[in-house]
Image (cartoon, helix red, strand yellow):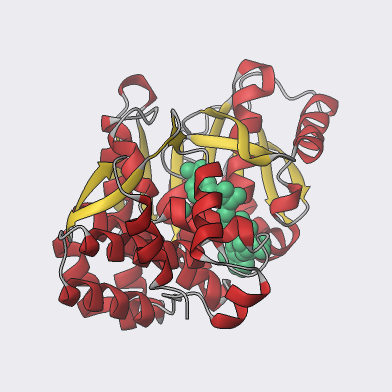
Length: 374
Ligand SMILES: NC(=O)c1ccc[n+]([C@@H]2O[C@H](COP(=O)([O-])OP(=O)(O)OC[C@H]3O[C@@H](n4cnc5c(N)ncnc54)[C@H](O)[C@@H]3O)[C@@H](O)[C@H]2O)c1
Ligand SMILES: [Zn+2]
């Protein structure tokens, strides 16, 4: 395959399960790129209505250029509440009814919900078929499409049923972000900035220089920050695919953030927004432990604010949902990252370097949370 020079590629190094992530502007139009992982005639594209209306025909045109393929499309209903067993079954129904065989290829065209469900369906159908991720939200491009975590929710909790299952390739077309609502861009930026906080101080400075152009969707800066983010995720996943160690640092801000999401019933904040506030709580706690300075915190907060992320809970939300430090702390205890009864927190040693701690006093945690409630 000839890949044009403006495409950036990251390799996720996992031995026999290694795969490339191609990043660039206009990739959906490039037949040579989207056809990379195809060695079958049967292709099942999974998407939702909004995304399919925008991008499905472009993708199908590129897939079928000079190729004779049978393409089935499954349209999933929108939303986190539909990331469930019943909807998953509709994918299997269609694959079985159309007699898709074990050597078919599944393609996820969508955000994290479509990606997680398609990946899990691919892991299960006939004990595992090939799949490709074409993520269409910034969050999916820098986080959920990379690393092989797939799954669905159970009524008793998020992402409780799933598999580690790696795709054959990830194709990231930065142009699709133009149709994404601005709030979703901001939510994705929180995860981008997270990589800087936990392992790359230089990236934080680069973001400081470029963030205004990036959120205006400059293709050049978008490709650069997505490339750096995917490289970080790929490195972490290559070191620790099944989350026995370093992969846990990707949960920076998430124990606080998950508690905020749960207490606000997943209706008030997008995941990335809750994570932005959670990261500020984790930064404040790191400061209370004497690890990072007030100047670091001010820098971090400004960066998140310039990315249009919230950095504290509003008084109205705190009142409406009873978001007291105690209630948030209780909800943190219920998060699945509590190992053997101990609250495991990802904090910062300094900007650009994380640490994993399970020995922090409750009083300090409450103090850090309280700082972020107006
Ligand atoms: N597997 C992982 O490692 C991992 C990591 C993080 C998050 N997740 C999962 O990801 C999910 C959240 O993903 P998300 O934030 O992408 O949300 P999402 O998939 O719900 O997409 C957000 C919204 O944007 C719309 N949309 C998507 N692409 C668009 C585009 N290009 N133009 C216009 N609209 C578009 C969608 O229809 C949806 O309404 C959660 O279920 C979460 O659990 C998984
Ligand atoms: Zn996240």
